[in-house]
Image 1: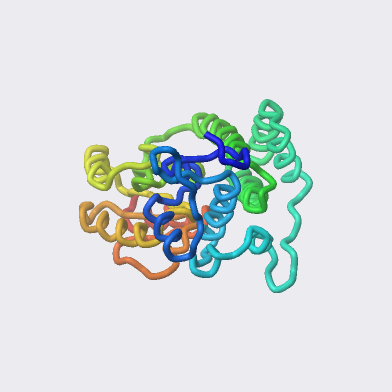
Image 2: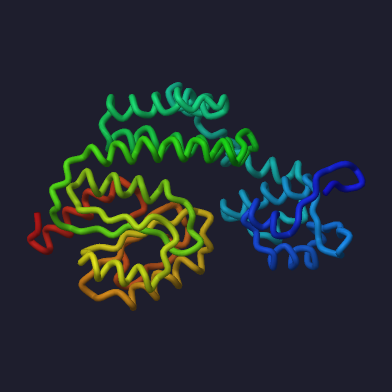
Length: 306
């Protein structure tokens, strides 16, 4: 369907899937902020223009960065795009290195085979741990900033993520698996679809000789508990992206900690701001990948494990 001005139109369900903003939230914003103001189709159902969807995408990016809806939903698209610029105190963000820019350019040019080769060769040159910390982390930031500024489409960010995940899985598979302690169960909560952070954590655990059992993303809490007990896990490790609702992070961790046997440690990491808001008894927060080796060493020292 197209609007009277020839723009494609999208149902509220399509907008929810595309932007990650729930239908209920869209309706609340419509009443509270007069945006988005949808048209109606022949059945009286809400439909949204391409311009509205693009603005909602920008709003979602800013929400993920910590902006409040009341401060941004009513702004113009030009004002919103200015807010996505990585300016802090008048100083521009430092440019990424030439090597990082090469990867971003390959993503923009959709040169998948060359992107895979570039990342694969970087792993072999650097080793997996330095690759994760010195190469992948800065590139992830560069890709995220390019996406926030509208310089990358969503499908291009997905192309990068899928290619990198393939490279990491191959690198993890090449690590000798000693089967030693700790046994680490890795997953995410329901509605947390971002797998890259989880895979990067798995790589770091594997480098340290931990036995890793990955359930992938979006595992219900009850099933996390069942899996942890069934696999005799020593640690349950969860990854949270910046996009995951903060209240879900804290409430979910408290509930999972209460359901897990006390002997099973619960570790959480990722870029979600909720992890730094307050401590939760029985939950270890690892703010950076570089903290995993020390955390593993401490765990082994306390238990006399190797």
